[in-house]
Length: 120
Image (cartoon, rainbow, N blue to C red; front, side, top):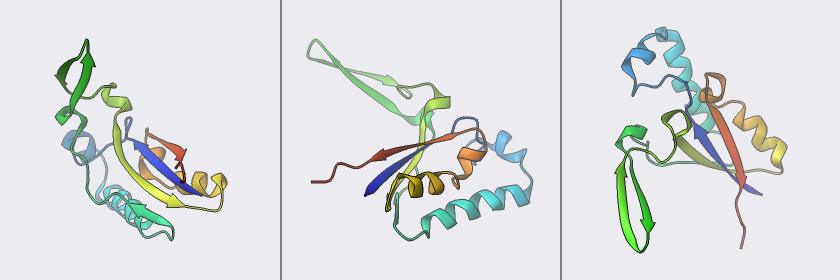
């Protein structure tokens, strides 16, 4: 089965927040980069090909009464904003959970949402 793993940054520090990222030691920063590289090299993983810009750069679109409305920023609070995603071809949900547990953001204040992909 194919799963989509949605990575929510939560409080996990990223290079997009130089102050929070700077609180990590060089070794911790390297471990985060290494962790994501290992995920991308996992058999069955199809990583996102591009990195998302920070949530503050988002534009949210709503349609009400047939009028298109836009607002600056994400639809959800920044803590809930999506930080990335990947696809994972796995035998079962347990394998997807095991992979999700290796996502650095999940260990640093974020979370990973797993959704099965509808197969046609």
